[in-house]
Image (cartoon, rainbow, N blue to C red; front, side):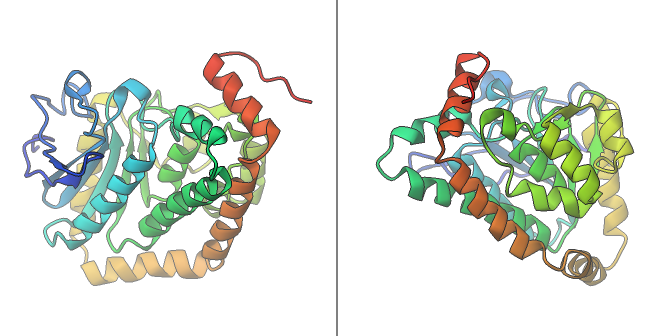
Length: 302
């Protein structure tokens, strides 16, 4: 089994406009399915990418924030998919998180800070459009995307799971869409959830805003397999090897068939959901819900 972090690194723009190398320190798949990079994380190292043919791996790299997505991070993930699209030796992409979480959603502090911005409404629309575009990139990606869900996947983090093709979870990988508890609407993720599990199951999860455990996510068809935490990347790489035995053209056409026939109206629904999500951010409920979350108190609804 290849060492997760021994493959060649790709490079991405940092927030300072320079480039950062994505080569972390020593880490082994056996000890941790995600690179042991929590102690060596630098501010601009928001993702890490490695290529181990036939797989390429994108690691969400903010373990101290449970891999919550910033705006810059979303741009870097988008660029990583674009780059791995061009890598001929990569036949499938593994998406996972560093540390104990897969992805805790978007960075709530960044979102809350936007309330005081003069262009807040425009920023909400830019944010939802950016997230929508990432999900669409994943759905249209010509190679299989395998989510190695090493820990909780929440909000837009759950959306990353649902936009993937094959999902491997670990026993501690909770899943949920708690947006209503923050005064928000999971408008962009909702169509993906209904696409994967059906309208009834989607309504149950969205309206209850509950977190379900990994076993429940498996039973509802969100996760396809549960594997031990220290084996999740290896299992995902095995899945990539299986996919690599098929014709790349046939795989691409199969993905297109699934997403454009079975999910015929998915693009329209994602656009509608993005508009609802952006509008929800402008409400007093959203401001109160996010403030309560950051202040670690119960929200006061009117």
